[in-house]
Length: 310
Image (cartoon, rainbow, N blue to C red; front, top):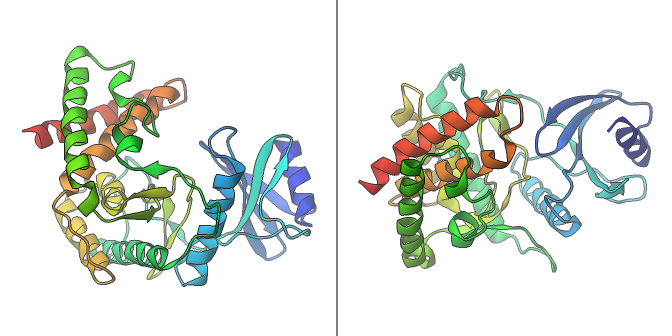
């Protein structure tokens, strides 16, 4: 990756900049320091998104940033390009947002005044949804869809969760039972559910806290989807907090201060989110730490599935 980074930085006129790897999961992300300015250089994983999908993501982020949502803004190369290709790898550059992540998965939250923070998260999430609804995507805009097929179809976006190779027969039966019931419910309800562009991955690491400001990063999983899926994604990662009920209520209060949302089906979307992680980890079981993550995902899914089906 070193040669790709160096070749890419030349395109932005930053060949003398300092850079270091900060994340290597779906994409390789590098922090680039060029004088007093910092940027995020993203080397996108081959085959995950097409150039058209990546370009659409950058356009949406630009529109959100222009309307006041605190998200990264794309930076053009010397030739005015926002997305380039180096040795078959798609590369882009974003401005670096100040602040620190809300927390890390699996650890207790240590944020001061957590209720106020979650209220602010809900407000910023709602502003993203509201601005997205008012925005007219350009021609050829394309992103994947977290719709009924994307969540429960034959080829869900994050994998066939009912075929996770580590599950036993009882868990498989539970997952299939849920899939059948949830598919029926979504088909019955989808025309009445709030649907549009969503971030789809507002976990702790992608929520940046900067004083009283909330910033949203990493739109790699973004696309069209149910707005409750965004809410569920944030909440499911905080279920183990002792004050989870207060955090949930604060997030929803903040959201509703910007736009309405019907949460009657929140339990369904919490469970849908849980099963998606069981699918996601299935193709990553050889990665470091995957065994613990898989166990955690299965335990969460088992608990939520049982509650929902009962």
